[in-house]
Length: 418
Image (cartoon, rainbow, N blue to C red; front, side, top):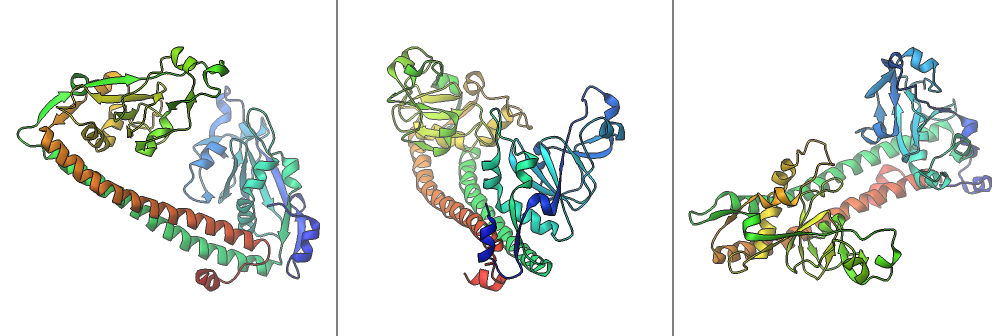
């Protein structure tokens, strides 16, 4: 959100536009020397952008690391008084919180202390509405950083204090209602996923007497790929060969991807054509990617972060059966790699090859696949509906915030009616 002095003409009577530096004190942070033990494990809270990204609330009352009074004196860190707004000004720009206790920060944060004519929550909401603009003001090569000078020059609309309190009350109520609705939608989304998972797990847990168990490495061909040298533009430019990466796994059924390599890239790397209808599993990746699976429905290659699993004998095992079996075992696959926050430890072909696959007769496999194939599209439809609801609520929040700082915010009843 960027405002100019001329914009004051369109604001309600009694509003004015000020520079942030005129209505707030802006404090930079700092980091005591990490090699000096007496600077650390003290009594002063010390916040970083990484810490802010983990906060479950807009308020911060404790920090993982603390510094001593000596560490405070021998660094550029300063104590920020309670009820100030903390802004992460790099890596990334835009995390926001309000401190309920005196706090210090590293150099990746700015403490913004409102003066008498600005309510802290009003300032917080204004900055939340301005995150995209704050990022535009950032500069730097390795990562963008917002300087205190540029931050101080930002224009902020200032209504009278009673109007600020009215706006805050409406935003608090509206955001609480949106948060509750979003929570319900997220629960429904998870319930839809759980319904499908529950069906699949019941199938594979309640194995029949005639089911065999064999290792994937015994009954399937496992293949991974590779990445052509990024220093060779001719391996990628104008390439027509589909080249999968771990992020493509979330399609569940892969018919296309963004990645492309050339014939030269294929010849000069470990990338290989994968069998169509094979199950693709992510060996690693950010967040929930590791252990996820998808069905490959088109000719493609992949990088080394994926493995293709394809039955050696399709008269013994159906490709789709493999997919649904591994889909139901997501949590099990995560635990095989020590799923305790160590995202760098991934799966590999040896681990996958030694996993046991329960194998019923082919006709039983067909029944399982057909039933799962009927349920899955309906679950996907529900997931799309709930994701759209969640996205629409985020758009509503943006719209309400925008109106709040242009003097157009209605009462909560009018918002609900809209």
